[in-house]
Amino acid sequence: MTNECIFCQIAGGKIPADIVYEDNDIVAFTDINPEAPVHLVIIPRNHIASLNDVEKKDTELLGRINMTAITLAKQRGLDKTGYRLVSNMGRQAGQTVDHVHYHLLGGRFMMWPPG
Ligand code: AMP
Ligand code: ZN
Image (cartoon, rainbow, N blue to C red; front, side, top):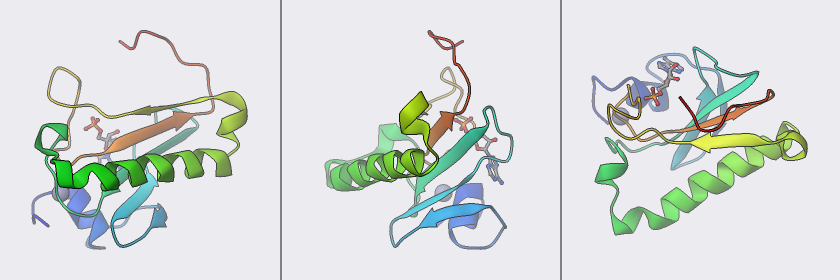
């Protein structure tokens, strides 16, 4: 945990969030600035700054984050309509919080390619 990191603070219960799922390794919560009717953020509890910093030992964790996203999507009926699971890495991709996270977006039509 780093004191300055907003997602570490959410995972540690230091600042409030609408947490929809958590276990020992993963936390998922509603995005504070939703870009779709469903917009969840799924994070590892441990601080990893970006996908650049992921190591081989994190392979299972990343798989479990994917499985968590799929389950959360199904719980919301998005498996019937479609959804997008995306992780922004670095400034050009639009990463603003330097703690690995995946966006689960659904509930509306989306454009491709992304802007
Ligand atoms: P990114 O721009 O890909 O780094 O995504 C960061 C996301 O975190 C944005 O969609 C923000 O709206 C969201 N966010 C930032 N602060 C909070 C917060 N305190 N609670 C929930 N979501 C947040
Ligand atoms: Zn962090």
